[in-house]
Length: 354
Image (cartoon, rainbow, N blue to C red):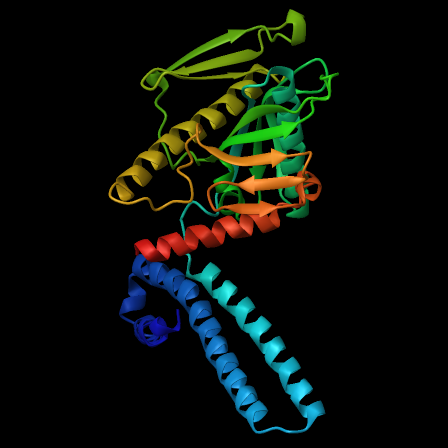
């Protein structure tokens, strides 16, 4: 990792020269772009300098240890080396995170869709559990979560739920949650105590601004209808539910949670825009990664990404071979260790592919 330090130092020096050039400053677009590149590179160089300093201190401590005969001094030197090695490991991990090429989507808010898959009522119950897990995690990050639409079952499960999550670097943290989440446990609905396997699908879509993607009015078929609730009962007696069909792609979005037709239409358009944007980004990613596998998981909805084994209190992320025996904490929103491991693995793969 440190072999590139000289190269990075040279790049940083060249950037500083350009940024101090009054002629270069006249091109605001180029100036802004270079400022962003510098803000990404500078912390990498600083962290590498810190790693070099720690390496030097470790070598000095080891050299002193060789010639030392006093047992107390030997113990102190060993303790110092141990602390320095921990500090070095921490700095290296930090540097790996910093080396991840910034993605322009990372700062986006998201629309998350959670849907029960195979497993009937148990899958719906686990979909509700996942929704609670992401809700708790969002709370720890001080993000705002808004339910766009939901379809509940009679005993507290969720056939599907669509939520928007907004805040700092939401997509950067949750982008790797897309895929099939498998659960192994004894269902509440099972009287025989047998372990069942069920599945829930999660989709994470970067939320698009109106300027990100154009939706032409003539490409939309908009139908209004009365909102229906569980069991077919009527939620209200006005035609407030909205179904939008995007004719070029066939994407259909139905929104009925609000009593106002205008609000339902606005929410439906947000979801539609996010799905179209996600399609465009997936196409770009496929083109970029055509000759190589450059992602931690493809983001494909059909890819099994994780298993939640309740009897063994075990979580396994199959993409990076991560296994943690703290499933109870994870289900309560303690997702940071999993998410950081995925970010690092993705960054390491991106560095290999660079």
